[in-house]
Amino acid sequence: MNEATDLLIIGAGPAGMAAALAATSSGAHIVLLDDNPLPGGQIWRDGPQANLPSAARHLRDQLRNCTNVRCHAGTRVIACAADKTLLVEDAERGWQIRYERLILCTGARELLLPFPGWTLPGVTGAGGLQALIKGGLPVRGERLVIAGSGPLLLASAATAKHQGAQVVRIAEQASRGAVAGFAGQLPRWPGKFFQSFSLFDSHYRTDTHVVEALGRERLEGVRLHQQGKTIELACDRLACGFGLIPNTQLGQALGCAIEDQALAVDAWQATTRREHYAAGECTGFGGSELALVEGAIAGHAAVGNSAAAQQLWPRRARWQGFARALNTAFVLDPRLKALARSDTLVCRCEDVPYGELVDHENWREAKLASRCGMGACQGRVCAAALEHLFGWTPPLPRPPFSPARIETLLELEETPPT
Amino acid sequence: MPDLFLDGRPLYVANGTSVAAALALGADGCSRTSVSGQRRAPLCGMGICQECRVLIDGRLRLACQTLCLDGMHVQTRP
Ligand SMILES: Cc1cc2nc3c(=O)[nH]c(=O)nc-3n(C[C@H](O)[C@H](O)[C@H](O)COP(=O)(O)OP(=O)(O)OC[C@H]3O[C@@H](n4cnc5c(N)ncnc54)[C@H](O)[C@@H]3O)c2cc1C
Image 1 (tube, chains in turn cyan, green):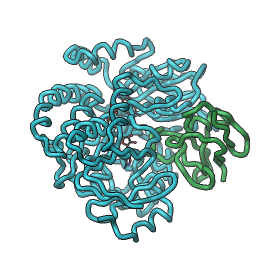
Image 2: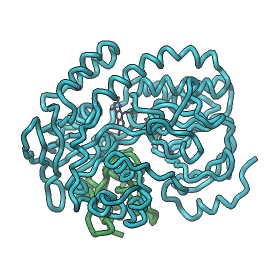
Image 3: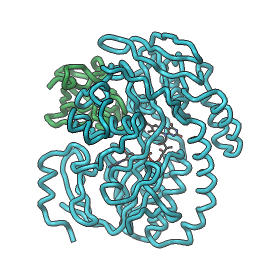
Image 4: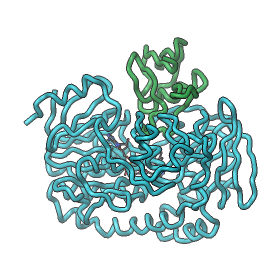
């Protein structure tokens, strides 16, 4: 069974949901696709231990009531099948979707940097732990260290505490001055100001970063560099993430240009490819409010409602200011580039250590010599880390964009829907 | 309340629980064995890193993006 639609939206986070809702009044037929079991994206991930805000529930209900929006959950994009046609797969089947216009709302992922012990069970991303907890991961009574950078550390800690975990340290790599400067600007965005107070935690330390995860079979503790001293803390989990990086792979595969490691867009959220738009964190990290307004602009623009799109420009500019403040405050300390030792694995799919990579000139050479990035994640983790560590440009994504079943790939032989 | 099998052992979980969470509810939380023989557990929690891929009813799937269902067989040591 193949499918054809006027507007295809990839990603059902705040940006994708807002885009679909903005476009719906045009009467266009819309398909909204996401690889998670439920819509909501990162911030509004639902689950047995999630606490969805009412605004998110409201958006979801509104979407459900739109008869011209079809949602495909648990569905990922596998390949470009033909012009304006994508091959997708869910748990049961693979099929092609042909579209007239596309909006990419693929969000962002965490930047994970290698350090000794980071492959031990018990070590996760910072937002990663939050996502796992929302899905039902039990943390009651466990001792947690949360480390890395950015406001996500506080959000993740709040979720963990709510589920009964004991957060023994929140280690922020940024300096006290940078964080205080950021906090000082928060009154410009009142909602965020109150949110940050509710998230504050007495175990928060600036100028502190992870040095090593300790343990034999699984995590038992962590060594931190805390404000000039080295300390060790016993813990059951370490959640470590160094900020967010845009998911640009699908956009790149479709021929959309990149700028500053994000999908480049104009004032209409249009990418460099005609009839292809992008909104939310795949165009740069900026939080859910920015994602919502960008999504709405893209949705209006994609169905030709320029006036409605333009009305939202001032609101977008306001939240772009917040994004700028955020990104300047949490710039990563160059010392974080020196955490990996020669035997620290960098590519977790093919188990390639740092020592086998460091002497190469670029990503291509390293990959040919070591199989780095040739495993299941296709370098989404290690290539992003190596881009940060060595400045290597990551490879262009190649289909299948994620591991797919043979039966799905055989669908590529089918004639696309007209 | 889904009733599934984790490496052959029965496990009951709350509705909406991810398979990634079930790995920790029913066993040591690990999902797979790496190419050099290390046990690994879910890392990114959002469908990117592929560390959590497990065999579910004979198909390799990501534990973090799959919900537990009645009668599901999950294997971490295929
Ligand atoms: C783990 C994590 C936790 C976060 N928690 C918070 C928080 O508590 N508070 C906060 O203010 N901000 C949080 N953020 C920041 C958050 O990303 C933004 O505020 C907001 O969710 C961005 O919205 P978005 O729509 O741009 O992208 P996202 O919310 O990231 O949504 C993108 C969606 O697209 C899907 N997707 C991506 N690529 C594909 C593909 N190829 N095929 C199918 N589906 C695809 C993704 O799975 C995801 O569901 C978090 C970020 C991360 C990564």
